[in-house]
Image (cartoon, rainbow, N blue to C red; front, side, top):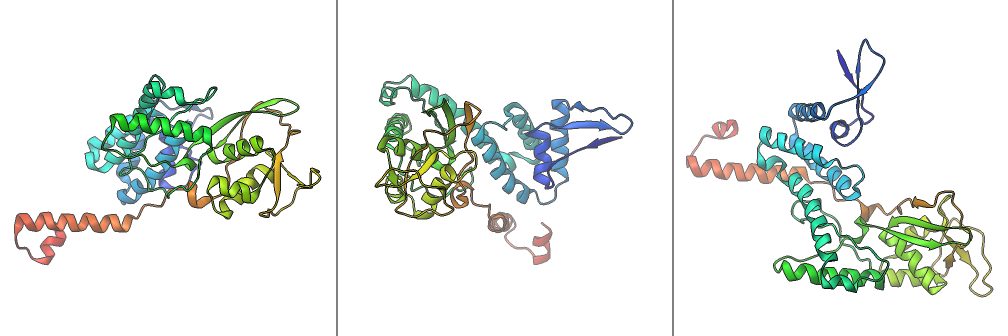
Length: 333
């Protein structure tokens, strides 16, 4: 007898354990564990999916989870997930998992397009010592993300302008809408003790870049330059000023330049500068993202509305072919 062990509790997370992370299988008579073969992962994933009753609910949430894995690029096992989607398509039909397959294809196509951009003349507009990569998401198939009011700094704006011109030259019927909060950035910062390679969200690295270039900036200054509201700007500064391990900003007295003690609140007139004495044992590290849930998360799928649309479409198709039917017969169909 075989036992499967999962850390997650929900049906989707259980299936994700089979696809997107390590899993062990244990025989009831053997204490030792061993990795599961890929073929067993795939077959088990399909078997679990086939037992789920509300498949549309499951797929609605799985789209959001898959989007996170595709955008992070750290938890995505391309070949395995493509194999699972192919088997599910054979089992349930193309329309059921079509959007998920398009999402996987979008990431792969985006990588190809980024490579083509780097070899084009427009890539010369990218600032020196800067690497710029883009992920293209098809709006109709990915989760619905909220609009992004963020105003990128000049260096990033130059990259965006160059890529947009490159893209529109070959895709005349498509329009690009940027969602900066889904991306990440890496910067090399020269602290007094040791240079660090810091990875964070685009908005976090932008804050560090703006403060470093200006020397000192108030919260109101950052709010205007970033194009964000007070809540989002406060959340950004807090992730770089109040964090226990990633305190890379100092609160200073604008008149004397003295560094002030860390506070639990941030005011619009507070002035910040780079914490040059910042020390961390690792040379490369990732900052914890800012807590601004309204932007980072995709909107939850409206499964009820989707079901109503499917029912309406099905009724129209049946009535077109049958012309007239009794209500009970229509319900059975």
